[in-house]
Length: 402
Image (cartoon, rainbow, N blue to C red; front, side, top):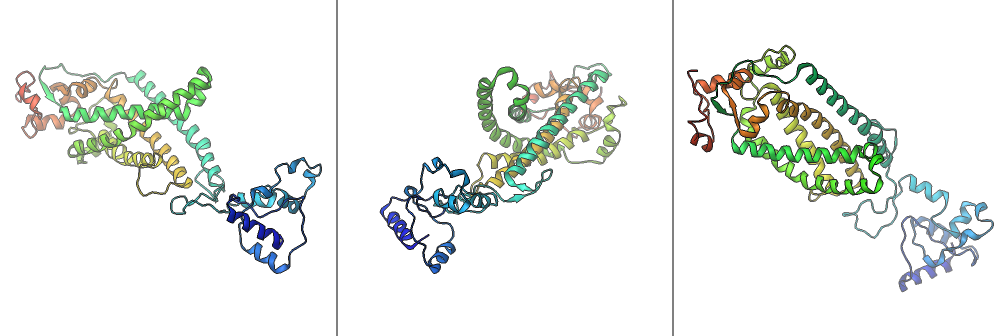
C-alpha cells in the first residue's frame, strides 16, 4: 500500500463515503497501480491490524478478468480484498475482526467462525460443527431410540401383566387422596408437560417421520405453530413445577420402608404389594429426580434458549451448550414420566380416577399404600383434608372399624 492511497482512504472516511466491513483489508483498484511506498510506511500499515476498505476501491467486476483464476493471493488481495486464501484461513481460525457494535452486548459480532472445542461425543473442531455433531449423531438418533425402546417395553409389560386389579372387593367408603389444590397443580403441570413433549418431539424427529408424508409446506406451518405452543407452555410448566414441588413436598421425604420397596421392585414382577406410605419409593424417585432435578435443568436451559434470563450475554457457545443440555435432560425426563404416566392411567386400576376425582376406595388404599391407610385408620392423618371433602364427609367417609 502507498502513502497516497492511505491519504485518499482517510479523506473518504472523513467525507462519509467509506463503509466498514468485517475482516477486510485496505486495497486499491487494479486499474490504478501506484509506485511502491517506503518500507517504513508499509510496516506501519501492516502493524495497524484489520483495516477498513473503501467500497468504491474494490472492483466489483474483477472476476471478468481472463486471468482471474490464475491470480496469486497477493494479486487477489489487491483486486478483491476479503476474497483470498489467507483471509479465509484467518476466518476459519477464529480471528475476530472489527465491529461497531459494543463488546459488552455483542462480544462475537466481529467473529464469523467459533474457535475449536471438543464437546462430548464430537471431534475436535469449531464449536458450531461440534454442536451439530453432538445433536445429529448422538442426541437425535440415540434419544429417539431410547424413547422407542421405553415405549415398546411398556407395551410388552402391559401385554404380559395387564392392568393391576384390586384383589379385594370395594367397600364404597372413600378416602380423599388428592385435594382440589393438589389436583389443579398436578393437571396444570401435566398438561404443560404433554404440550412441551409433543411439540418438542415433532420439532426434533418430525423431519424424519412426519415431513415425508405431509410435505415441506404443511410441515413448516406445523412446526411453526408447535414452536409457539412450546414457548408459551414453557413458562406455565416452570411455574406449575414449583407449585407441585411445594404442594407434595411433605409426603415425599424418604423413609426406611422405601428401601424395602426398592429392593422388591414395588412387587410389580411378583404381584405382591409392598407396604408404603402415601407415596411409594418409585413415586418419590420421580418427585426428587424427575420433578426437582431434571425439572430445574430443563427449565433453566429452556429459559436460556428463550433468552429470558436478564443480564446474560447470549453468545453462540452459550446457546449451543444450553441446547444440548436441554435435549438430553428432556429425553431423560420423558423416559421417566412415561413410566409414571403408564402407572397413573392404564397400569393400575383406580389410579387415574384418584387424580381426576380426588378419592380412592378403602380397599385401594389398603392394597397399594397400606402404611398410609393404617395412619388414616389410626387417626394420624385425616381421611378428608379439604373443606369440600369434609362437607360431604357422610357420603365419602371411611370407617375405622371396618
